[in-house]
Length: 217
Image (cartoon, rainbow, N blue to C red; front, side, top):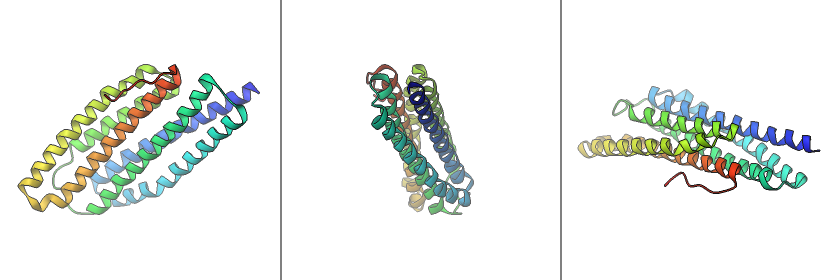
């Protein structure tokens, strides 16, 4: 019976990791769709979000089944509770990737008001954060979990730089406001994804140690 529970717990973990990889891919492709003006890719990201949502429901059902039938306690229960919270964060991150794709569609084939440099760089930091917390979750690596705090600081700095530059552009030329606001939204979506990655890092620490540790101060 204990071996069956261990296998089910491992299956839950593997599905959470798979969901993290799917979300990471959606975020990456969403930024590519914006930078390359690839509207077909933007539509594909929106369509693929259904698969992320379906996987979230599967994991949620598995977590519920494990609690109801195995009545776990201590470390095992923390693993399941962390799984619940992590997939919730991942689902919201996936929704934000869709929001970036929607911006791509709203801008359409219109020429970008400036070359996208900082937004892709910010997205790269976000991806580093996601990789760190997935690595942390996979191996209960506390060092990797805590690394997200430094990465999130860099994400926040990019957010500030992007906001300042876009606001200056819009003040200088009101004709740029419509698209400028859309790019501001993209930066905001990426910043929120970074925050959710930080939340996942905190869940990994709680899962491993049984104590709450803030990584976003």
